[in-house]
Amino acid sequence: MGTLWQGGTIYTMQQEHHTVEAVYTEEGKIMDIGDAAILARTYEEQITEIHDLAGGVMFPGWVDSHMHLIGHGETFLKLQLGSCSSVEEVLEAVQIQSELLPDGMWIIGEGWNENDWAERVIPQRSLLDLAAPRHPVVLRRVCRHVLAANSAALKAAGIDEHSHAPEGGVLERDPSGRLNGIIKEQAQERMLSAVPGVTEEYLEAALTAAIEDCWSKGLTGCHTEDLSYYGGCVRTIRAFHKVIHDRNKAFKAHLLVHHLALDEWLEAGRGAEFASELIEFGAMKLFADGALGGRTALLGRPYADDPSTSGVAVHSDEALEELVIRARELGMAVASHAIGDGAAEKVLHYFEKHPCPEGRRDRLIHGQILRPELVEQMKKLPVITDIQPSFVISDFPWVLDRVGEAEGLLIYAWKTLLEQGIPCAGGSDAPIEKVSPLEGIHAAVTRTKPHQATVYGEQERLSLFEAISLYTRGSAYAIHHEHDRGIIEKGYAADFTVLKEDPFHQGPEVLLQDIIQMSVVNGNIVFGEK
Image (cartoon, rainbow, N blue to C red; front, side):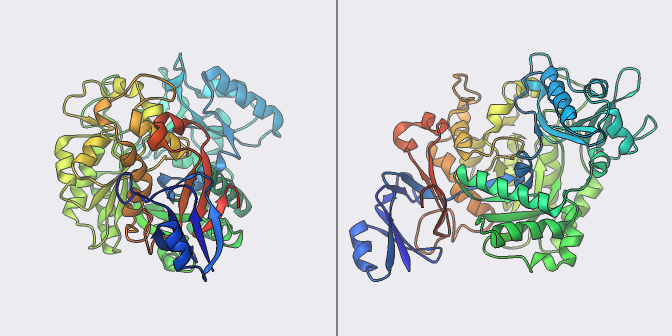
């Protein structure tokens, strides 16, 4: 009937360094915690299994508070360019793929990042035409706010020299005025809609790969935004249900509802048919700006390395307000992507003007560039900040060139947010970044790139307890599960992440090793030795 977990170090995360000897679970719930001998004696008749942690280190199950689960799964199915160190390597990968695929078949790739290259030459249309003259090519930048397309792809999308970018989008041109194949923000939709649609089998394969990989990284759940990208909200939800329930890939998926998927979701009864303990629906998702890499994050002043722009507002002020109002009319919180301080200012203004429904919490996703007055405003609102510690690894030092003089700005200021009482949750933004919470925790604690000494913003380093809390208590609080998830305590979910080593004793560098021993969802071991 029940399982006794013992034989290791068990951090409850109720308080820093608080541990217990054992945990007793039944039917997916924690029934009791405490002294191993006492629990064994108390529940002697109910215990059907004693699981020896073999010296492992148990935590409440780690949950990624912001990712795109299907997108992460697609990284196992598409051309991956994240390891490319130059545009030449990108082009070589495209050429190799073109030789493998029949003429006319689309080449889809993602993950290129020119900021990591010695020469920041991006894969423009003319270069891609040479690499793959007989295939439409679409390569999404690591941030997913920019894509590169060749001539065949532009033609398939009906984009030509007379085309105009929609509001909140950019169709870049070369100095002669010709389209160069670089497409940003809202203008991407036209191109992406031309890409052949995915099948339900593809969605299920991507989800299966994603969940299995998440388990191996110590994750027992995630908050994800996938419902507007794969040919229909309901078919996407159905894929989640089939994989998580029918295929027994137990994983706690909290699904944000993109505003473009809202109507279909409402027509489907808010997904009630598919809702369960493992699948639930959350806030309405919207984008207020873009990303720093492509200079489309909306800043409150011009970019230091390109004073001609301050970024891109994805919606007009009127449209942004209308979206917030609609969410409120539906009794929903809002989860808004806002990287720049200009975007955060707009979003927080409408959060305050149109208060969040009682008992719900809005979400500022990313919040990478803020100002002190915005933090003061946040303190008055039911809003959490969804942060991605691994951005330290990918964004520094080039992000400092984008922002320039930092006076008056809070740059990736997570310690400041926590000290000011702003609740924070930790995620990866996978597939834009690696899904590993171990690397995220390391980045939050050290503010360094792996195996490098340079510290970026030492005053914003978190303690190890604070960093792990982002993925336990923080992720639970963000979705109103602070009373049944996020700590090890009676009545809480039997979701556990077990490590082979103890970072509290061995220091944060151990987090860069492969130390995931086990992942447990609802009392069942989904990764590691059974």
